[in-house]
Length: 226
Image (tube, rainbow, N blue to C red; front, side, top):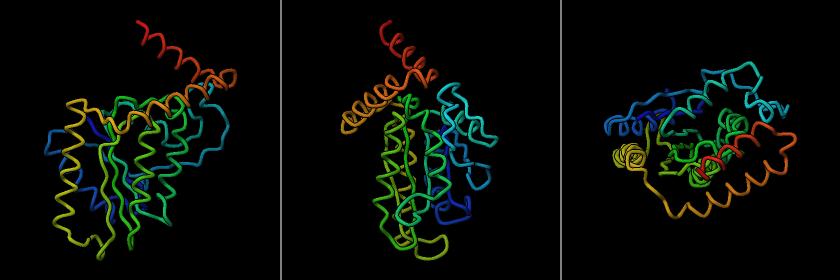
């Protein structure tokens, strides 16, 4: 079982978000998963320029690390998204990745996979960002296993740290368990079905301009009918 953890802090694994992610990763590894950590701070990632090429060919032509990260997500059984809370949202590094993954959203390419989210903040208001990140997991077609977030008590330290780290390790183990048992989260079913139908409708509407995504949806339908 392979899980990819994407950390979007400019400090990489050396900051507060990296410290909390360490515990989630430890829990997943103890439960038997192989973890690969990708730090967006150590990659080149340009903003989407809306050139439309990915909708035509399935490949982004920008010369950076995006296609490699996309391949890692597609090849993993599950994933973890980790970001600091910057002005009530994710970091710029993660938002760029979200925007660039629009093709996976249109095609619901991570359906059948599972994700979890990690967030830290300077002084709280964590829930809004955590919910946004979980919503992004669902937008890819994947199921969200859980979330953990916290304000800081100092550099790489947190309030009620022992209890927080215990929950973080439990989240990592829960992600592994969900993947292993192919768990179904019925409370997310309507959201996934509604958004999936919306994306299929969008691709159908744009099919003349988006041939790659049109063909992918057609192959999905044929596979379901067999």
